[in-house]
Length: 91
Length: 440
Figure 1: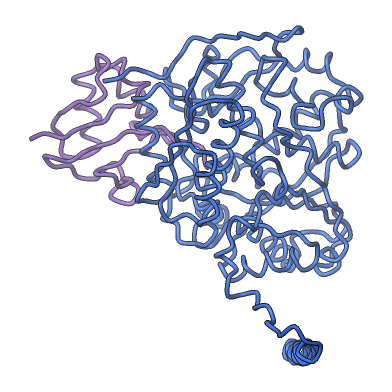
Figure 2: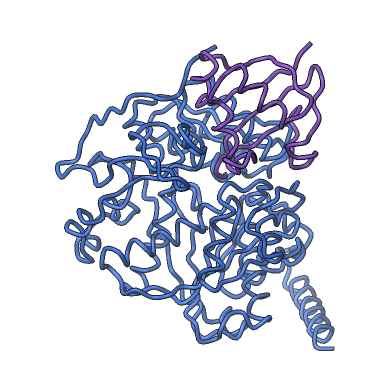
């Protein structure tokens, strides 16, 4: 089992229009490099020049916002689901 | 996998004068995009997209007189809004009363306090009718036949109602613990209503994923650049109703932060197009203590907003992960305003205070605004001489649960004069005791 990553529509151009991809990584920050290895160019959309996650993108691990976990260092294990969601206005 | 929400722009009913807007632009990095159903800067930084206007054209086209001759709705400001048609969806939204308060102002010690009363906005009694009227008009222009939203209640009411009026299919998503009035006030319009077991932020996340797979127009997701512009009309109307001038200070509730920043934008646009004189307006924001991520960031001097998990009766503003929070922070700071939060008990007191002094029954968000207004006055953060406008954005009949048990009970009597007189005497005694207690 690998980690399941839900890709938002604007980034599916990098993933051959796939909405879900599977890969292996030990943490959210490591996942960025893994994704970049598979889909060149995707990391620059998710991280700024300093490698920090962009502030208008939200990351969830098993439905929990990573800012309630360990941020970009949040560990990942097989079977986890990572969801990448652009910020949304309220409601 | 079903593909994508982007649709070609189909401006079926172009205005005779042509639109005043031409593109979408990233608020963060400036990258521009064609006008479509797109809300984030997908080629660079994921920042929010905003509509680009030709202000020279607006300035040539618009005057105080032309606006005053327009419809008695938000569409009198159509040249400032991102719709191309000459026949937008007009359900009488906007031009709500700007009430100069007497009793509330006296109670608070302010000389010039106004209430912008969107508790009586049409058709669904909240400011959301403004943003939805714009979003659904634009949705039709972009060729959508189904509209949707993630909502804390008011937006669900409004989207379902105006979609019904426009003949659009509608599917809305709400947290499953909303007040009964907001659920019923959505169902009556016969949309598909999804009550999600989770808080608003979880509903939002789900909707982002749904928006990826369904070809629907989500008013606050892929239509967000157009939708959010509707809130600017709360700025325009106050300026016009004050006799074409800006107030000194405004106080408004903060949920995602969008309303706050769009009122600011509305004032700036009126200055830019010469409709009002330039003037510094202070912007103060109101949050519930149980969901106060922007207020916490303001008090701690941070320029980023850390999300929280909401726990407050003010459900309509319970957004723990506010998308426009950083912009609200920036506006409050640069205008020398404040952001404050209040407890649920203070929110109820705020609702009662507004009702008892001005005859306006607002929902919890309005109670939050009034309670924060009071707190800021008591802290000396609002000058008594300032012309201050408090924005009341929703109606109390939708959140009756919030005040039940805090506002007394009716006096049940027999249909006899004696029974009435006995009850009246008892009520007067209780009132006297209550008065004596508060005086002590």
